[in-house]
Length: 306
Image (cartoon, rainbow, N blue to C red; front, side, top):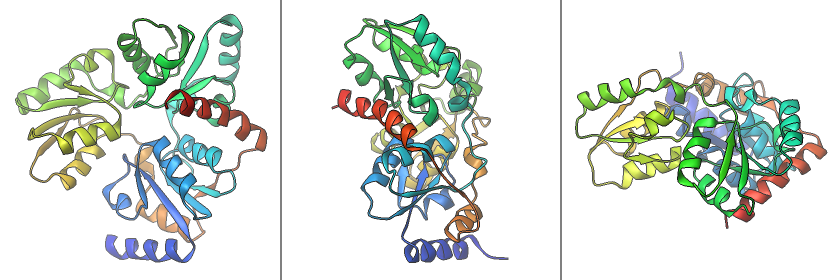
C-alpha cells in the first residue's frame, strides 16, 4: 500500500512533466493542498489559472469552479479532478426561471453569486464573490437589484447596503445552513473566549452573532493575523484543519461538526493522481457562445470592483 507522501511525490513529478497547474479550493483536504500550485477561493483560483503559462489546469473543487476557469482561460485544457463534484447551490437556480424573472422585473439589475453555472452566468448582468459583493453591489448605478441564488448572502448584503432595494430568491448553501444559533451556544460554552468567524452564506441568525463575517480567504487571513488566540470557525470544517497547520499556537474549533461539504470531500488525493496520469477526471468543454456571454458578467464584476 502506498503512503500519502509517495502519492504526493508521484503527483508532483507528473504535473511538472506534463506542465499541469493544480488549483485547490480551500475546502479540499490538507494532503491535496500540499500538491497544489495555488490554494484559495473559486474566483481567485480562476484568476491565477489565467496568469499561468501552463497549458493544462486541474481544478480540485467543484464543477462551477472549473467552468469559471474555462471561461477566463478558453485556450487552456481545463480538468475537474472528480467529475461527480457539483455544487447544490450553483445548480438550484433554474435558467428558464431566471429568464421569466427578468421579464417580470425588467427594471432590476441581476447580480449572481459566482457560485452559479456557466449557463446561468450568460443571462445575468454581473457576478459577485463573497469578498467583493458589497463593493460590487454598491457600485451598481441601479438601486433595484435581483440577487441570485443565495438568499443568506443576499440578506447580509441588504443589511450592509440599506440604500439598495435587493430582491432575493430562496436558495443557498446547504452546508452553511446546517449551522444554527444552538451550535453557537454550544461552541461558546466549549471555548468562551473564542472569536466567532463566519461565512455570509450562513443563516442570518448565525451571521448576526459573529465577531467577523467574510469569505473563506478572509476568515483564514483574519485568524492568521489576529493577536487573539482562540477561534470558532463558522464555515466548512476543513478550514479548521488548515488553520491548525498554519497557526499551531492558536486554538480552532468548528462551529458545527456537521458543516462538511460532501461535494468538496468527493475529491481524493488518488483522484488527483489519476487526473494527472490521464486516466481520471473530466475535461471541461464549453461552447464559444457560452464562454463569451458568461465572460461579460465576470468582466462587469471586475469593472465595478476596481
